[in-house]
Length: 252
Image (cartoon, rainbow, N blue to C red):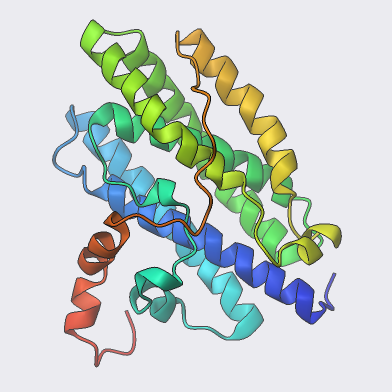
């Protein structure tokens, strides 16, 4: 499909921005563990995952650029908190190791399923980008699923922390599937996956794994996208700090 209506183009731009913002912020949160992970091997592994997430974010922003000519660096480094479209899930502080692994697992499962569905997009550049990102995302999912199991079935303390993390994270994870206003035109044209269908695959997938780990997802209402916490402004101040200091630079 090559000819897009204005509504379809805007739907694509919206979803690409959401995808990029989620991965951009989560990559920063993961990178905060560099030098502080429980073991050296995991220090390297999570740093690699953070780098992958950052690469995916820039890929989505580059794809957006082909649609509206926007500057990926400007979108990443020069927007304020009110302009970001990420889920609050990705802006929460890194917490302890159990919190990071539970959050990353739930997000990885969502992302892998979204990318798998997006491979069938009628917008060829999106389909190709999703297929490429999915290769790495499947590794992320396998890795974090193993950590959730290890923590939940480990010591009494690691089990307690994992249960607490799931209670805290679950409502934010459900918010990943909240519909975006203006996205329907892209879904109807086959350009974008339907979030409700992604959730229908995600929920039994993660529930089955959590159950095997002795965990039960809590009953909770989703925290909708667009609901930011006080943590976002602090995260952006750190993430964008160098760019703000050298505002005269035109390329990064």
